Image 1 (spheres, helix red, strand yellow):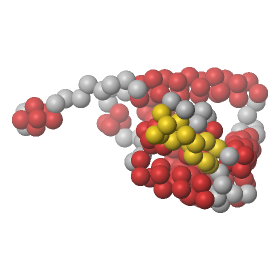
Image 2: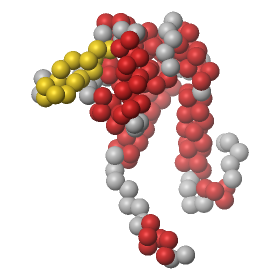
Image 3: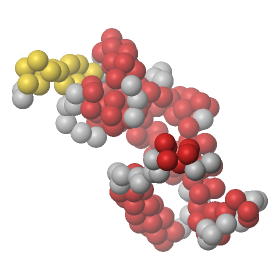
Length: 174
């Protein structure tokens, strides 16, 4: 098990402490600029991390409104707008009229954008395959099942409203 401060994990099982540590480490490694540079080199593309996140998100759904993208990615709408302009300029996305509301626009991938997403996915899959090359097929199957369950449960938990104490009453109890 990783070196942990037991006092910081009071009342939490050692397995949960280890899982939290490993997830934090994995998030750090996956989010590093160097990792993104590797992915882009393997895919033969020159896109920043935000552009990749937007392309992957659009690819996972029907054409989408820019505001919906911002909510999904938990970023400001202006950030998405800036990224979409760049992606439009290089020919990866186009804006189309929303058939349900002519005043609104949707964003969809072009053929070039779809090809870029496929290159990113393939490069990412090769990276995962290399990292897990020594795992047995049974280990891979078990991990895929548990990881899918983990993501499902995390998403469900993230969408559950939190019962946070009222700041005003919490501050007055000091």
